[in-house]
Length: 339
Image (cartoon, rainbow, N blue to C red; front, side, top):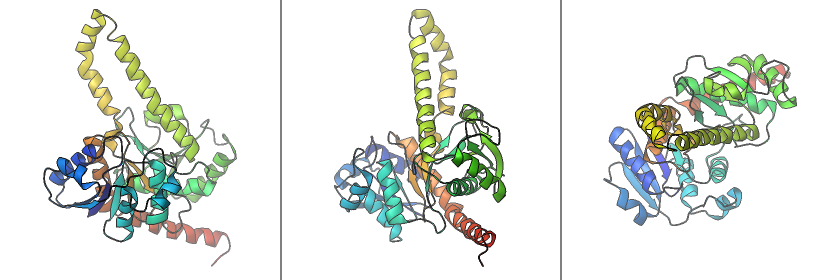
């Protein structure tokens, strides 16, 4: 299995990217890597060249560039060359911690969509209190969505959760303002009916944002605007809570002594809520696995994104989505009176 990696993407590139690859080389003998980026900056972090090829380029898409323009103008950027490796058949999948919008654009324009998927979805796995986690899609690939897009998200999310995360009969919930069947706006009401009638997933109905971290569902479906707001609200709340705890537990000597005693417990909680343990956010609906690692990824987060990508390749997730969409398109045509 061959994975192309944008070595220059992210806040800690290329150091963390290469270090994560080094950990993967030691762990997985069945993986080969193509690192795309400035070779002079990459090589100092290589502990060996085993199963590694470097494609040199000094052009990079920065985090503040307009995605579509950047992908079209910077043909020799590390991210664009990475996507081309997949398109040309030189790699089976690709990973970047760089500009999210540019990666989505490169995925769409270069890697391409699976037939039958109208809108790919950006899909991270969130931690839950019970440690099982849940997948949410979409969190920003498409700000606007149609009911049929949410049905496709439900199908893709269910396949990923079952094949890659090992969840039997994943519970699929629709993010809404209430759990009652008739709640929501026009989009959620129509999507509810469509997903329920499809019978293609184990649909548990509407779920509320306050219940997400309690593990109310294994897959949570929403439009990209709502998903992105939810993502940032969860991240921001977690950071604020830890900041307030730190401030309170270092305010005086008694608090510091208490903090010293409780430190192992806090570390356990922090590890349980660590996004990096779940890998990156996959772009579902493309012809090959495209994974967006967090911009601030360290070596561990990069390693887990590689592990996640390897599992996607091993389980044939993309082929499973393709076959499911072929059947879904056929059923839709029959219901519409087609042949």
